Amino acid sequence: MNYIESVKWVENRNIPLGEFTTDNIKKLLELFDKPQDKYKVIHITGTNGKGSTASFLSNALLANNLKVGKFTSPYITNIREQVQINEDYISEDDFTKIANEVREKVEFLDSKEIYVSGFEIITSIAFIYFSKEKVDFGVIEVGMGGRVDSTNVMEKSIPVFCHISLDHVNILGNNLHEIAKEKGGIIKEKSNVFSYPQEKEASDTLKKISKEKNSNYNEFKIEEVKIISSRDNETVFNFRKHKNLKINLVGEYQAYNASLAITILDFLKDELNLDEDLIKKGLENAKNIGRIECLSKNPTILVDGSHNLDSVERLVENIKKFNYDKLILGFSLLKDKDHSHILKLVENIADEIVITEIDNYRKTDLKDLEREFKEFSNKNIYAIKDREEAVSKTFELASEKDLILWCGSLYLIKDIRKIILDKIKKAD
Image (cartoon, rainbow, N blue to C red; front, side, top):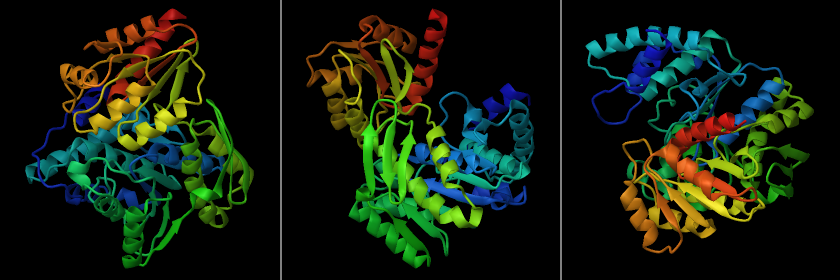
């Protein structure tokens, strides 16, 4: 396979559906001598904040001259974005070479009716690449849940829990206890566990699992984070003994994600001889594509992958930090999300609304989405199926002092972000 063929193979890998387990990916990785156990792993789960926390951690470790692999999902720009070392994407050549090695083993397992999915394949490519390149740390983001996620195959790790809320309830459970129990499945025996301040139901569940696994549970308090200033381009805050920390990710909640990263870095500080000033520099360098990301000014154009009630609430709160005349909303949503609450939240901040369809089998039909909005909204709603035409409509509706916000799903933002950047490039 060449590069294009290898990407198509990974993305179009169709397998018989069955119960979610880690058995098959473990069998695949055993054929590569368990590469996931060749380096230290920070394993990150949670409902919201995984990408930001991974970026804070990897950048801080990188600033301290450590070699850091990072695996995240889903991707926004291209598939290689998911597999990075020192913030550089895996090269097309390395991706192709490893994909070909993996395909040979996958086809061997196919012959034995042991099937691995496309996500298990890209996860395996990351683990193998990090091992080949001899990274010091792998910062690994869970795809969904934790217990039976494809990433949950290492013998040891530092388990990290970002904010847990209700999402994927049809798979993970319909209350915080059940969801936290699924995510808590990443806790290994005798681990040092680190958590964002959780609601009591989730916190109690994680503490119980930690105790059962003879692990130390660490959770900071929101009150320990002191916001000094929060504007549309940076947040400055204090956390415990750390003063005047600056991050360039928008939103006060990002200070809490950064504080979670700092609790882990403080734990590793003596072992790795981490420098305080270099940690601060690394935090400031952190980026997270597609999360309240500003693509242009005059008008201000933001894209955000918020896709559940908790993250949309945070997005709406942080939009208040921007100055604008009108807000032009570009929006779509997957059909398995909390439509009634999310639609009312985004409608409330919008002056004009453009809706479109997501290129995903879980999409909400455009006519259904339009009908849902019109059940409670009298605002102008433009339903445009073609995503490029929908972006053009938001541009047409906006003046220089307005704000264009595209949000609702990472799957949507993946397409919209590229369309917007192409339009900006053509205009220059």
